Length: 511
Image (cartoon, rainbow, N blue to C red; front, side):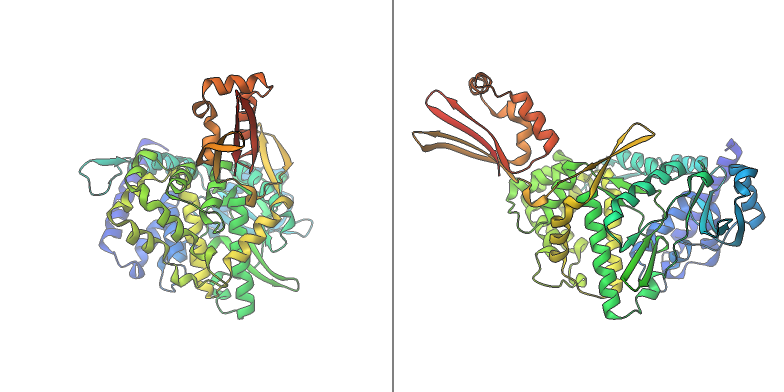
């Protein structure tokens, strides 16, 4: 993108910002404002898609129109982009291409029929969209926000960096192709959810060709029978819990244009589209997430603080509200702790947390890691879908099913750019420890017993006195190997070791 093009685009962004500020009633946005957001593509249209999530159940939400906009580039121009990206030989494999298409923030999608007769979706990236996104991101570099009413400003560098990373990653269609293959493996035991199958020989860094997924939009599903809507609600929640607790990777772009719903003889099937925006959680983070929502795991104030830290929250910013975090955990657990079906409309998640924290809500928000933006967006999306379906389901039952079935699924680990290895995981969240217990006994009587957060197991060198560590080594136990084993196997409930020290016995156990 030339300097002139950047300046012109920045001017258009400034005009759009002014128009949006003058039309604060979102349900009454003028057509020319929507046209501007659609024509600019990139960040403005992505912004509109994010705004569409919270209001997806309102027929007056103007941003819904931009989740699958019909404001498309001329078909002849689309064909030129496609031909330029694939070449003559690949183009010959298409029997026909539909002139009807939809415009997304990064690319334009049309259906096509292959010579084999298969119907496919062909997504072509807009020329220069990557440089346009980079230009837009540079234009918002002034962002800052206040913390808890204090005079100084809180740096949003981490959030801007995460926004840049996720948006630019969406322009990498080869990465999205790999992600589709990965989710296909995740879903091999879940027939109720399907993702497009990519066609590698008809894809490139700017084109992604994949199987066509037919289905109804969520606004149609709201008129289905109670039984069908209940199945949809259960499947959405199951997909959400499997994503974040079992696979450690979730779809993070849940706007209505990315979901399709079908009634099959075998039951309901949900199609999930567009995997340019996903998020991967570290094992420690997904384990912490499980400890937060599993009502059978007892948490105290210290546990709650350590669990939020394990999720990536900033300890220094979190510290002033440490005594309130247990209350936040209880709010997060409400649907899972409910006896029987839970009415999602009574949760009021954001409002309850704000009411509980008061002015300290700002500390909580800014303590949160930027990397969780995608997870939060996925959570907001789930809540909105379930609200729209108006069906109460048992969250506890589905959480138990997901936990019990976790060992049937695969965890994918990457080795280099070209190779992936599939490893069977036997992760059972009910076996995750919440505490580290250190006990010293003498003459079969407990002399000392200390209980710490389970994460303290990673810091055994800081906990164990040097003379005890030396005694452990003499008895053939290597502390380095024990710590390495914890990092490999996670914080599973188990006895880490017992050691005789003079006339005392020391045992350290994850419980």
